[in-house]
Image (tube, rainbow, N blue to C red):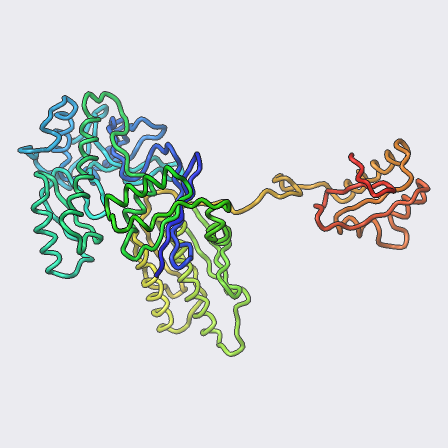
Length: 516
């Protein structure tokens, strides 16, 4: 499978399109100077306690407070709080955590009011970005994710991705990580680390340690809520998460961003640096690679698949609802069950793509066309499971109900991506209303009277929308003939399909446009 990353940069944002075999499967927009991003570490102050929810609201220095639940504090929250106070006082030992003594782990059944108090400073990390009217959701367990490893302070545990099945490789990675792991730092080995050398893993480790050191340095003498260290920009995050050996090319239309990506990849995988290309053609990069066309057809309330099959996608505060419609997708040789199965299969493939493309999280309800046979419902469920396996976000797919409804839950960490594919109506200018035909005709006649009686034009030719043209010219006693008799001048009316309903033009006897 050919994988490409197309990156378009402007002064205010960076748009990132991920293509598989030229087909758009993921789309991200990174707003510059965005306050909250998943992975950012903040020095916050507890603003309000909520004992009934066993949670608190934390001021991060922004417009909305963050939500912190007791179960998200992390088992080593007391240890982390102790570290924070030492780092705020400038203790140099906090840069390495050498010989740092851990505190007692938190009880899972405890109360947040016993751990934090209103006005207390806390060290937290963004788990979910603000969604709708809700502020960000934060946790007290800090970690730093890299391409191959995840660095977890206040731990000595080494975890290997379950997707690495080979036992010899798991043992090799465990030995390598044990040899380079800093004291009092746990490590999670990601799937991408499979087969990598100790030099590559060590380079990733050093990069993560630098982010830890940046956080420690920014904690020194901290007195107010603020961001300590940012997650890498979304371009680097996507590269970190999706860059694999079968990645064929990365195109970027901005020189500065191109150099940043080259530097990032040379650090992680020098042999892949040549796949990064600086796009310099005059045609906009999204137009050149067909991304813009796919965005127009893939976003919006109605998504057409093929052969008349289409989806209707609705977003609510609680869930997303997708309705599958067959349109005119019928074949004379197929039964109703066969047609429904074919339509549902096509829809399942597109729905899995739409969830990734729009980053739809939370609860998703899909209303498939009714299937009578149990084996067909089971096959459709398996198709959806197989397609969703391509999605890196955590998700759960439930079998179809007897009403042919499918429930899907997908990890929700940021607002759903909504691309406005509608254009302002040239007839009403977005107001939703236009002049009536009678009002337009009266306006035309007022202009005729002015041109013939005041400007003394000898004859007129009027071009109008075909609908208005028909209204003025059809019938034995048409409006046009009435004007000719009334003003005793030659008046012609011609249709023009390029004009909107309310537009019209006047021309004199020489064919010159009369400016009104």
